[in-house]
Image (cartoon, rainbow, N blue to C red; front, side, top):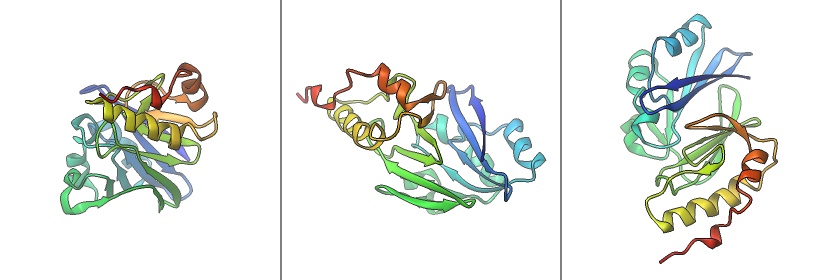
Length: 193
């Protein structure tokens, strides 16, 4: 498996191309902007775009989907039907699917948005805006913050320290580094007034 990183300057969000080199198939995660570099990566490597995974429906994570759909016919997976209408495979809860002969585990982590999903492929977790290097995603209420922190504690912090986090914004990191930076992380400490 190979992973290519692309920075979307409109929103400074990260887009990832995950490639199964054995079968020349790819998955794109959060195409905030699709430019010549991304198209060239697919075309020059003769990749079949098997799927597009969306972590949440914010423009800086989905705006490039329109361009991709004009050129390719990938499967589109998200927790929000509005991402691509009837072409969206709507994910709910937690589960796993096989795409490009890779196991993709998905987990619902609402809080930043109601449709936030993280994806795990091998030892990589694509966290969108749920969790980045040293901070959790922004929320619009103390209840949303509580739900987000509770789900991070249960679904992400329960994993091994060597899990590599690939966030929607900022640099990659490891779960161990995030855990060390957030040692005071306690969802129960939030006041729900």
